[in-house]
Length: 173
Image 1 (cartoon, one colour):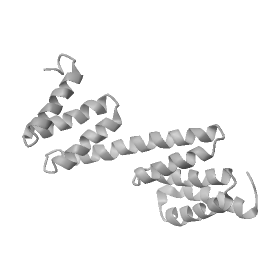
Image 2 (cartoon, helix red, strand yellow; image 1 turned 180 degrees about the vertical axis):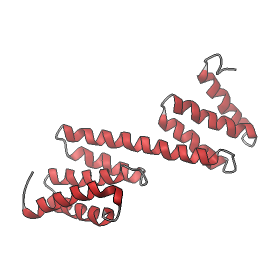
Image 3 (cartoon, one colour; image 1 turned 90 degrees about the horizontal axis):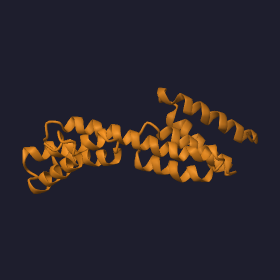
Image 4 (cartoon, one colour; image 1 turned 180 degrees about the horizontal axis):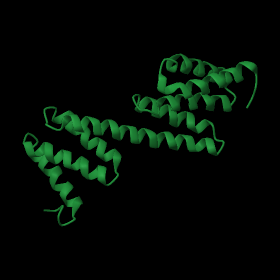
């Protein structure tokens, strides 16, 4: 009813009440999923991820639990990429210390995200840029070892090998 009246915020409020008051009902799991859908469609991805995660936590037998799992994974990828982009913007400004903290956060918060390898190699690059060449060298070597067997990470490996050689030769970019 509220959806058809385009009062979607009221709809979410009613769905939340249903989940809170009748958490064991079949309608509660559907309502929780709908809350996630609302936030997803509104591009409020953090809120959507939290809503779908509640499906996994509270309703593991729910018929759409596999769909919720995939949505949580997808939304984690989106969030990780956004945080990765935020870290990389500092590189454009020649601020190399800031990305270290931001990209390390991506690696720790989203260990399964597709951007983890890029975050790791850019952390090493940032250390290289701020003159911590030994630390950078160690990180590049770890990256090469970790990602050499991964066919989809060969660009990362190439970048790490190139920078390792530069550091070992004493070259500065």
